[in-house]
Image (tube, rainbow, N blue to C red; front, side, top):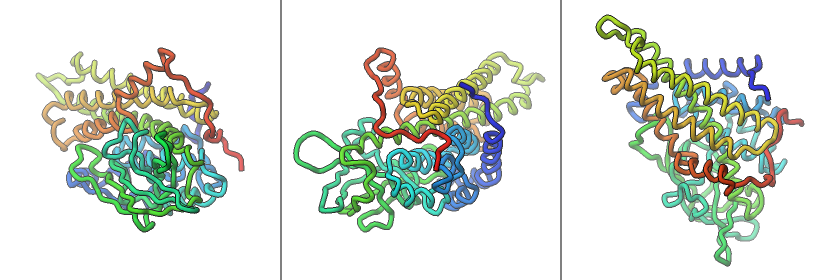
Amino acid sequence: MDFALTSEHELIREMAAKFGRQEVLPGLTERDREGKSDRTLLDKMGEAGILGVSIPEVYGGSGSDYVSLGLVCEELERADTSARVVLSVHSGLHCLTLLQWATEEQKKRWLPKLASGERVGGFGLTEPNAGSDAINIQTHARKDGDSYVLNGEKTWISLADYADQFLVIARLQEPGDKARHAAFIVERNTPGFSSRPIKGKLGVRAGNTGQIFFDNLRVGAENRIGEDGDGFKVAMSALDHGRYTVASGAVGIIVACLEASTEYARSRKVSGEEIGRKQLVQQMIAHMAASRDIGRLLYYQVGWMKNTGIRHTREVSMAKWQNCNNAFQSASDAIEIHGAYGYCDEFPVERYFRNSRGAVIYEGTREIHTLVQAEYALGYRTDRPLARTLPKWPVKA
């Protein structure tokens, strides 16, 4: 097991860091204050090749490995969470799930346009009354000949107003009490589809979040991903991919907090002495540094497991749980170090704090991940071999 980054990894990291500096940060304070997202950012990500990261070359992507996806997420979130969320949804939840579950015909149909940024992918699982208990979703699909009719709604959907197509999980409407689910690609221009933004968010204000609705929406069987009854497995596979991008992105917030805090601690003086000399400030700085290094090791491990085709549900849960908790703590400490200045947007740490709070909730709350890890440790939870696995890297044509 070798976690040393290659020269290609370093180039990809620098590319993403440069994109964050040049395309994400300019005007960010104003967008965040006003709660406005920038749709053109998605086009720029497509042009830069970011939306094709870890999609095989045979489908029009960069062909880079899964560790590369984590590195890009870290650097994007170092700039702002709204940028990383795009990659989490488009690449993690949507594209990697298609790579794992779609037929070859479906992959050739959708992945090239997704890799180039011609199309942007979204994901629809959470509902107003089904979050952590996702198996109880109420959006339903009724089979009608060679198609399905969908009715229902999804909420807290990133890119709800921007994505061109959504991977949607629905309950199959059929006789009997046993719940079965199916997964579908639903395109925005399909009659019966609509979306509505969610306003007044605590964090990720520069990102688009909303609700999507299905009103007697008809989708062909050729848009079904997997078989009838595979929907929940597809959803859980998607969450493994999404959690990886959230875990790696959280390290970006930790890095940003550490950079801002060390700079401020060296420049701010109390009684003629830099506050960085104070032991309690050093304690907070040290925790950020440890969280950064531990966080990277956790997501590098998951990236390596993805590359080698090993199931990683426990490991990605651990990475998501710990990295998001540590990002939130780092942001809280960063505000403490900045004092009153940390409480206003003159400095970026208050934005890191607001943004990091959401990640403790989405892609599985910290309480859910606590239970997951305990059940693995106690032997109550074990992983069966996956019916379909993510292709090992490098992916052969």
